Amino acid sequence: MQKPRRIRSGWPFGALVAAAVVLAAAAAWFLAGRLEGEQPSVALDAPAPLFIGAAAEIPFGLADAKSGLRRFTAVLILGGKETLLADTEFPASGLLGLTGVRQESVRVKVAPRELNLADGKGVLNVAVRDRSWRNWGRGNLTELRREVVVDTRPPAIEVMTQQNYINQGGAGVAVYRLSEECPVSGVRVGDRFYPGFGGRYADRSAHIAFFALGHDQPPGVPIVLEATDAAGNSARTRFPHAVRKKTFKKDRLTISDGFIQQILPGLQGQIPPQAGATLKEAFLYINRDMRRLNYEAIVAATRRPQPAMLWQGPFGRLPNAAPRAGFADHRTYLYDGKEIDQQFHLGVDLASLANAPVPAANAGVVAAAAFIGIYGETVILDHGLGVFSMYSHLSQITVKPGDRLAKDEVLGYTGTSGLAGGDHLHFGMLVHATFVDPVEWWDPHWIRDNITLKLEAVKSPPAGK
Image (cartoon, rainbow, N blue to C red; front, side, top):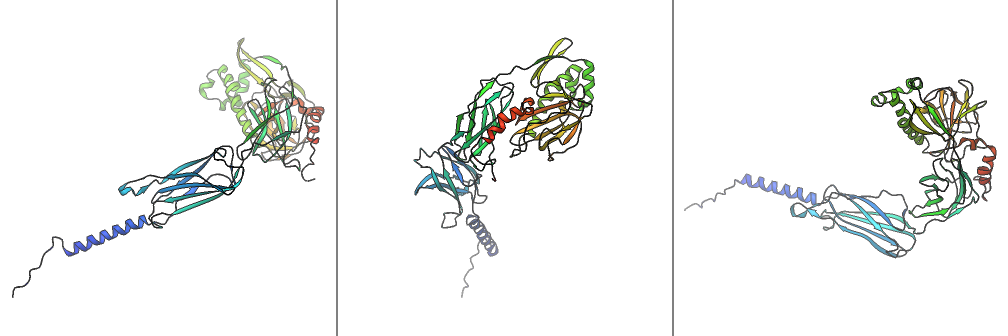
């Protein structure tokens, strides 16, 4: 009897098993990837509730690191009505079109009037799906729900100070009411904005804004009240005022090599080598570039004012001191008989005894206590609501940032630091980042007529009473 012949395969049995195992593993790996269960992420960097004004763009950050993004939808539910704001399909790529977009930024535009949306409270529903095969091929789902407020009406501003007289180079105060909470409100003088503060009155809608008319701004510059609500709606209203034009003194100062050599030791380390090749070039760098950089440092110290009014009554003046230079004096500098520069003196120079104690002009918190270039050793006091006083050319500082000082408390001693030709105090007043005439703040009649009476005339009791 003839035995049946065995059919030999071209592949050994073991190799076939190994190949099957590899294929099964690859299939399992592929299916595991396609059936991944990690949800996509959606981020909305905006406060809650979300305010939507006359026009808005809502930014979303979407991501899915594994299978990629498939679809994004945004639906607004307002007044019983559902409005589809966005429906985006993300393209796929790669083998069999299985690779999705891993990360995407989406901005959803909302124009309530075009969509016939009424003002009111609603809900924004956002949904993101990925390209996983889970959930019967629909993918993993992430939903985000956020309360929204549709507000297309600008705020109303009620001016509460009707008679306002402002000196060129001087300050003023505006008291006003807002019809709704506004994160930004205040007085705009030309291109300069002075923010207002609430909290002084029991009426939370009442705000105070100290502002300035710069010495370099013309009397006819527009002065208006502005407010922007949480939805981005803005409003402006006229601020009734009259401006008194001022004429500022003009000086011609001769700069000698001896004077430059006198001031250089204290400032030399702050002058770039190329800027100090000659005495004249060193002086010009100090008087122009360093002055500008020093002003930027001063502005930085005034950016976060105390939100309450810390001072009362007129500001004090350095005792027994004679004035040496006035506010906004226009100085022309001469060297070798030729004009080389022009600058404004934005303070009042007061000379007393050498190393005289310097008292705080009014109650406040130390915002800065440091060497500031041409101003030398300097202290800046924050008196609240954007009002600051500055004390420069000190020989010694006896306070530190954050210290709370009472009126007349000693903060340092007069000296010759910085760009000073002799022992004196350079005293300045600022409203936010604008230097103003200190003489106003020393005058009890000006304080009473232009600030105190206006604040007291508001028909709202102070907060807490």
